[in-house]
Image (cartoon, rainbow, N blue to C red; front, side, top):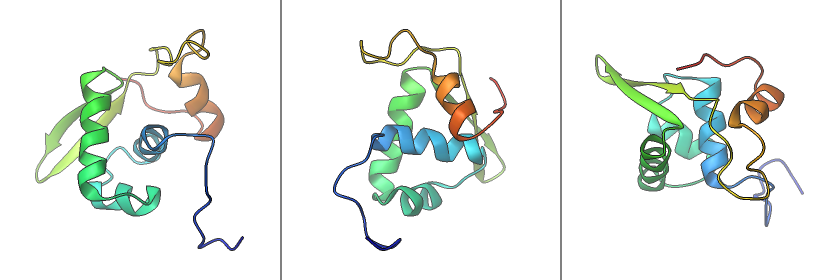
Length: 100
């Protein structure tokens, strides 16, 4: 498979991919997230809304852009991973991330 081909499945969901994009760049634009994850801007907005509603992400306006902050102290949502905090995954895949 070439780098440009999209795999049939991945270990993380689109929600996880969006969270990682935000962790890497708290000032990232929705269209940039969409391009990196391979989803539409509308899907990106919906996922960011889910993450904000669940408390994993806070969003604030800075001029014409959004600024995101992550709450790494929340557990994963699925019972299989619930004993682990989201921050554990972020530290492994992104490195140190700024807290809320």
